[in-house]
Length: 289
Image (cartoon, rainbow, N blue to C red):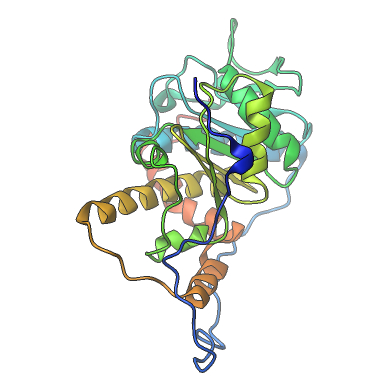
């Protein structure tokens, strides 16, 4: 199998389509009042926080299913346990995203052992441990990780490049997304997962060439929303590419300004709420069981 030599590749985050501003131009929207994306939340005990994370993770699986982001048994979402930060909760190998409940989730330690949750005979996708364990280990700021083989994300990943920053929506990833420019087969070995974590670095998303998308966040809410948004960004990029026309570039300062407003952890958590409200109305929160 031929594998791209990642040591010679660059995880570029600055697309060539961005325009530089002249020194004569005034600052972008100087003095503008920023969005208020704050959400009220009572201080929680470790047990309450654990339950919240598990419920939100189960809801995230339902949301993924509703938006067509699952594919058989591939794809996995994880959340760090608040009481045991070296362990994380993950979906079992054989349960459909659309059927996921809090009681199905498995708690895995740093050795890959299931130490809590799920039913008898419980097991998980080995690739989930290989990828997620390394990221949780390398990024203590990351609470949740989302990865799946979504249609538009996987299609765009086959091009081996980053999306251009040509829409307002895409700017949540401005200077915050990278490309892992290689494919070494289904990920089961630590060596491959180390490379992915290195290319992700301190960003919120990485496109895995010939594979799919991966997003992270300081909460299940933000990591999930970033994935939903990145899937749409990839879809829009494919549609723009299909026109054969050159898109109008966005200025660097405008991109930075917009990213600072919409690309924050608070923004990601806030934007997740309508998806949660929608799935709660549809399911009656039956994922809490």
